[in-house]
Image (cartoon, rainbow over all chains, first blue to last red; front, side, top):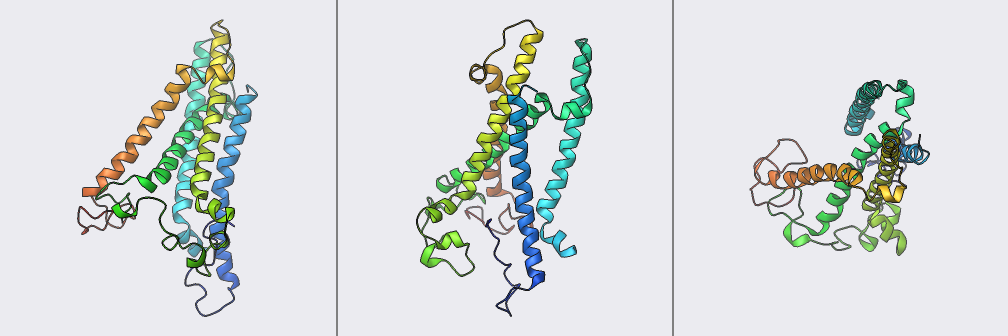
Length: 55
Length: 222
């Protein structure tokens, strides 16, 4: 689980069970984390291969 | 949707600006590369071919590696190194890894703490250093990618000048590689040092990168 993936503070103060709406916002946070991570890793791997293969 | 945009505006804003700058770099680099090819009476290449070339890859990775180095050093060095009065420094008495209580680890964690912060042993240790570890991995990876692209570029130049090509290991010992690396590192290190000292006396209202406007000059940390 990436850092900060717990429910947002304040979202669920009145309920023990997170609402689907709050969870969808958590998904947004998680999507940003993985979008950046995957883009950077893909870029590094891709251009390592391009260089290594003398392209 | 509105709430999503607001809650993620920092990463979305920088992501869009990054893609625009990358597109601009790639197009300008493509034109410049073709000008050089034309000057040497060589075949011009398409924009698509330039995007998957070692020339473009090395240029992009050269800057990525120095940025990841900058943040790796900033994250790790600020554990121990301090600057009195700086927003970027911890208070002087808090140098080091700090207590489990301050870091909300183990018995001091809350039900909302990440699972691995509540765990014991290697999982807690790994998660406690996960940001620094990721940054150093990305730095090493992008530096390696830069070296491979620049090596291919260097050997292409050698071939064009009827000179012998070199191995990757030989290339990473050349002044060409170190000049490319160090020209970026020096600017990143200067920017970090400047940021650390400028925040002692100067303020930016509303920015988390600044102390509150009315904070005293000798207040260390946000």
